[in-house]
Image 1: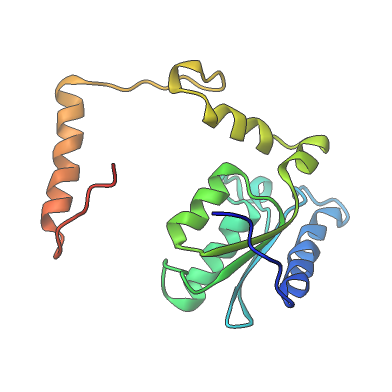
Image 2: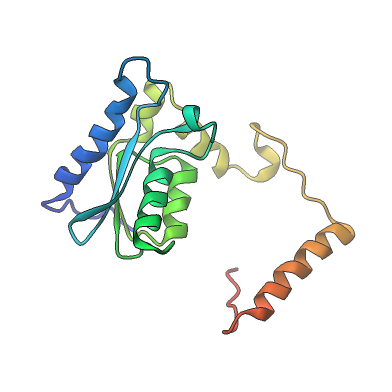
Length: 171
C-alpha cells in the first residue's frame, strides 16, 4: 500500500504522541524516548510511553502500551476503526502488533533511520528480519520436527476444527 496523505488532524494527535515520548526526559527517568496514542472518531482511546525498563517487560513499547490501553478501554482487541500515532516509526514488533489489532492507519514522526542515528536498533531489526532464517545473526532459530512438531500441528488443527466457521489458510 502506498503512503497515505496527511490529514488535517494528524499533527495534533502526533504532537500528543511526541509529548508522551518526552516522559523519558524527566528527572531520573529510565524510559526510552517513544510515545504513542490510539485515536477513534477524533478521540484518544489509548495512550502510552515506553515502559520497558520500569515494567521489566521487553514488549512494553509505547505503541504496544497504547494498544493495550485502547483495548482495555474499548473492551476489544480489534481496533480496526482506529489510527495509531507514534512519535517514531514503529519497530517490527510494534508494526506487527498494529496488524494484529487491525489498525488501518499509522502516522509517525521520526523514521527508523532517525532512531538508528540516535542509538536505537529498529532499523537493524528490520534488516535482520528481511534475511532468510538461515542468514539471521541475532539469535538462533531452532525448528524441531518429528513427533513434537506433529503434536504442535495437531493443537493448531484442533483449534481450527473447533471454530464456528471454516478457517481460511493464510498461505
